[in-house]
Length: 375
Image 1 (cartoon, one colour):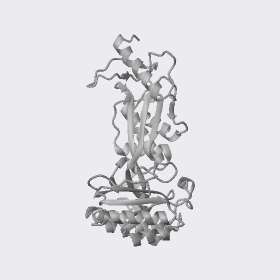
Image 2: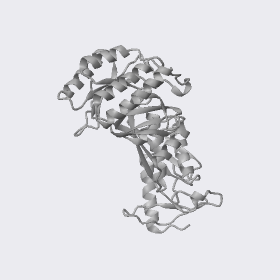
Image 3: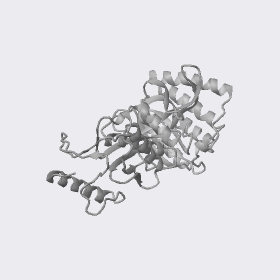
Image 4: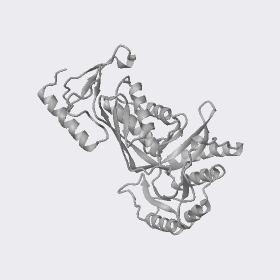
């Protein structure tokens, strides 16, 4: 294939910039013909910003999804973190069958950004190395979109602490799927992203829905219910205890809830639906506290009583926890006249009680979000 002069200049610049910023994604010395696939035809595609892209034409063994050419380019995907759950248990579907599900507390102030750099290697690699779930997710996304031959490097930039229950793995996986789709100029709907995420890591949080409230079947990658609106305006004081360690919930036997607990989850489902519809932070806090209390039978937080005492003394409307890590938090009604004073008091009490990794953040609050990690 012949590259014209201007195309060669663009390609040299792109390769040199990627080599400078991402030395872990090697290109051959002096390489000017990047993305050499046996089944690729390269052409100049003028977009609005005059960026260069490449078109992949499927071979005869590709699926029907490959019938049309795909444009290959650098792709970027993003996903937010979460701060554990507001509700987790078992919930029925429209046919009355029970499914394990949860309602995630979003933490939009931190997240994962994944960039996919196509190259002429034979597989998908990651930088940092050993992010196998993200690599698997990107590969599944390319297969889903009819481009299984694509290879390259995923660079993962994240502000999410790993191993504390913030959903770092799921954020990487969802961002990798979105980066893969962006690399070939394709769209994936949220249900497809959820299905691919579960295939890549067995269980997945509802991070693809950002700050939309849903009851999500984490081991199936499906929504059991779209809740009727946004979360009430909340401030959250989050922290963890050194006495609680992260748990691989996939290696544990799933909780076998008692019949009374299953009935409680049915009631909590109705209450959280009402709390969101009526924007009632106090009711949401009651739901979250009840769910966290039930969880004590299955994955105990050693200082749960202290957590409850801090909430009561500090004017919180409820507590919430991560069911797979040491995270816990106190919810504050952001519409309370003294909400900020409550946040400061709760954070101070958590620090004085020996809790660590104290953060404050806001959910669905107008104006600048409360975010502080200096307690």
